[in-house]
Each structure stands twice: as structure tokens, then as C-alpha cells.
Length: 456
Image (cartoon, rainbow, N blue to C red; front, side, top):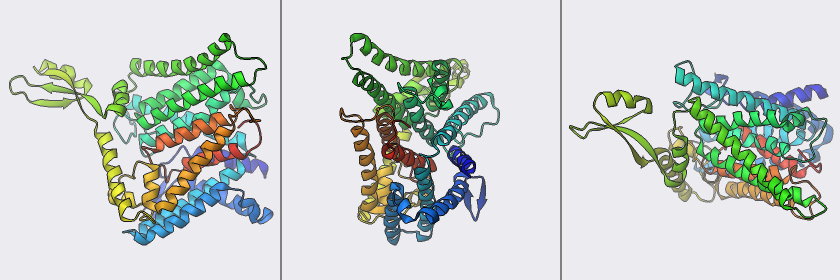
């Protein structure tokens, strides 16, 4: 039975990499993680029968999910489409079951869970690279947005989030100075050449998604891991750190920076993206990006063109130049935030039911902000639960860093702090309210905090 459980855990985590519906039932898409809910739910019921309710009460996701479901149900009283909100609530309950299943089993089947995540990230990254190459060559590419790979997700932003957050446990494992020697995955991650290649592939995939929130999350994660690596190295020494030790601290930062530089180099040389990456990064802070325009000298007529069209228009007598314009994606997110805030002002205490932001945008977009999404959906109670969870993770992560901590930061604080910071940043621009991977990530963070072992 134990072997079957291992297989179920591995396949369940692997299924998180595939968010595209397998088939339709009654107008709703059935996804792989929903099948994992069935398997996980059966195992939870078996353990509940054997161990009693006191065992289930150990799960923090159980109480978090129960509270969110309750507040979401109260918000349905003000929903313009109660039937749709009820459907969303049913999906939420399925996600809670999946999260509880992961939280109560990751400690026992940690290796299988991490292998599932590792394989999922690898396949998603390689497929993302293929998608952009195929797009450039005119092959079947299955992209939902031109020149932006989405992998097995409905859109590129979700793929970027999955890769940026999913990479953290492997970054922290590779940064640990006391790896588990019997763990084959740890051995692979500790191989400098193999892990460097793996990291370059994943970071390249993250960059070409042009998911700028994921870029920021990845940078924050790398900065936190680098800082804690140096802190942990010096803390565990019997004598104070020397100048040479400080160089080792800088070496980790140089290592991560070189991966990003290599990825940008590969993207440019292999033409893996049609986007101006540096310009897109700049647009995060200045809310504008550069476009290429063709100008007819005789009339002053301006046409926005693609980069590959420059020579053709120049040969036809047009003048080519670059101009900065407002970034429509940034403006769109601001509009959604304003729209969601207007919804919140109507029902600030109880909210307006799950899916209200989808209803308001004709089922096209959520609030693009996790906190606004929960506030609009489940009212003040839902918002406080989500904020409380973030604070709980951050506070407990910081406790693992202090001088009185008995644990190695590489095993706990690195992942908890980097993972939580990355999750908050990416969800300031993408509300992962119904993304199965987000609930797995909660489970993994909580398991590390509550597990009294030294490392993940």
C-alpha cells in the first residue's frame, strides 16, 4: 500500500503542471488535479477512519479552507449569479481537499512530492522553449498569446508563476551545506554542472513567458536565498567570518547572476523571444514600453509594426523609429483593480461571492491581485484569513533565522521566506485563487514550518 501511496503523491504533484482541461462535462473542464482530488480524498477518508478527527485537525489548510469556504458562502448572498458562485465554491472545496491531502502526506512522501515537482518543472520548461521555437518557425505551437509560451497552462502568467515558485525548493536544497547523501534528487541538485544547466533552462523559460510578476518574484527569491546562504555559513562557524568567507557569500550571488545573464544570452542568440526583454522589465517601473513605428514621410502617417517588418517597410520608403507608449497590460491591471475596488465598496464586509470579478469582466479575468480577489469574493473575513496565513509563514520563517534557532536556515528559513515572498509578489499581479499549484505550495510551506526535521 505504501508503494501505491508514493505513486499517487508523485502523480498528484506532477498533475499540477497541467492546468489545461482534459475534457468537458456539463460545460465545465475536467483537469488532472481533479482526478488527484479523488485519489487523495479516498486516502484521506481512509486515514480519517483509522486515526479519527484529531488527526485531521492537525492540518492548517483544513481550517484555512473551512474559513474561506464559510466566508465565501456568506458572500454568495450578494452574488449577482449565485449558481456560478456555487460552482466556484465547489471547486474551492476540491482544492482544499487537495491541499489537506498534500499537507498531511508530504512529510512521509517528501521525495516523491519533490520528484513530481522536479519532473513537472522540467517538462514545462522544455515545452515552453519548444513553443517559442515552433512559433518562430511556423510550426504548431499551441500558444494562447503570440510569442509567449504558456506550457500546459491556460496563459503564460500561470506558467511563469509555476516555474518561479516551484524552483525555490531546489534552489534551497542546492544551497544547503549539509545535503542528504542518500537522496538521489539532492545528489543531482548538488552537481554544479547539472544543476547549472537545469537552472539555466528553467530561468530561460521563465524569462520568455514575459510574466513580469514572476520575474520580480524570482529576483526576490534569489536575493533572499543569497543573503541567508551567507548568514548561515558564517553563523555555523566557530570563528568569525574572514574576508575570504565573505567572498564565498558573494560567489553565490555571482552564480545566480551568471545564470540570468546566460539565459538572456541564449534568448538573444537563439531568437527565443520576439519581445524586447529589457524594455519589458523597464515597463514594470515606468508603465510604458517601446514600440516600432513606420512613418510615411509624405503624409506623416504612422503604423505600428513588428520588428521583423522593419526592412520591408524601409524598402517601401517608410522611416522607421521607436517610440515609448503606455503599457496596455499595466493599464489593464490597474483598470481591473479599480473595478474590483468598486465591487468591494458595495459589499466590504461579506463580499459578493466567489467568481464576482470573473462575472464583472464577462468571464475573462480575475482581479489580478490575490488580496483584492479574496476581499471581493469572501469579504473582510476572507481577506483577513489570507493575510493571516502570509504573516504566519513570514513570522515562522524569520524565527528559523534567529541566533536561537536550532535549525539550518537552508532547510527552513530559505524556502519559507523566499517562497512566501515570491508567492506574495507574484500574487500582487496574478490572483491564484483557483490554481491547484497554489494550494500545494501552501502545503509545502506549512509542512516545512511544522516538520521538526532539518531540511525539506
